[in-house]
Image: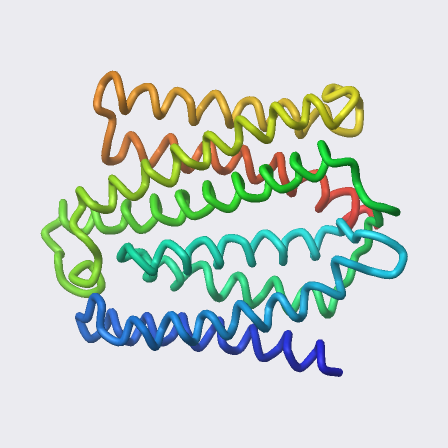
Amino acid sequence: MLTSFAGFSAAALYLATAVWLIVRISGGGTQKNKPGVLALGFVAIALHILTLSPSLFTAAGLNLGFYSMVSLTSLLIVLLLWIAALGKPVENLGITILPLAGLSVVLDMTLPAQHLFQGRPPLSLEIHILTSMLAYSLLALAAAQAILFAIQDWRLRNRRPGGFVRALPPLETMELLLFQAIALGFILHTLALLSGAVAVQDLFAQQVVHKTILSLIAWVLFAILLWGRWRFGWRGRVAIRWTLIAFSILLLAYFGSKLVLEVLLT
């Protein structure tokens, strides 16, 4: 009962924070009431952790089921966003991220799917899981940033600078934040692939070959994007396009097979 109350409360607070951000943007404010927004988000994160812990750490072992992993990933994304927002004007990304995080909490509570790992995983596998989740979370933030950047760029090109665009940082700042997130996520994704080569005996076994290939394709695309930024100064719509394509492939790698095997086929 306590877990259910915490879960629905977390979902409600995520939604309330997103609505607060929308109202703040509608009023043209950029940093107005930011401490209150961060405080409300922090309470939602704490309740999310309280709800997710029993779902992940069960008496039978570690639960790596689809909905638990989606909830864990959304928690990491929101937590990284909250930490980044302490020093940078990125909290408006929560308008799209926070409602999805709330939805993930509700799905994990109402549609449980278990994939148990009995006993404690080897250290190499723990490192692989941690770096993979952090890499995906950072690159998901980069994708959300790219979408917001694309909307801002389109409105400015069409001479529509009003509305929520006034509450966003300048294009140069948005672009800098985008590539910072991509660079850090790319480093973690590289570590995830290297640790996976150590933790998994055969990365091209039938069960994981699709995940390996898609992850490598995403890694190559992000590498090309960063190289193009360094060598040719890629920016704007080119950067947005490469970011969203690479992240879409990474999304399929992380959750596509789990969705099919653990939810659809079950």
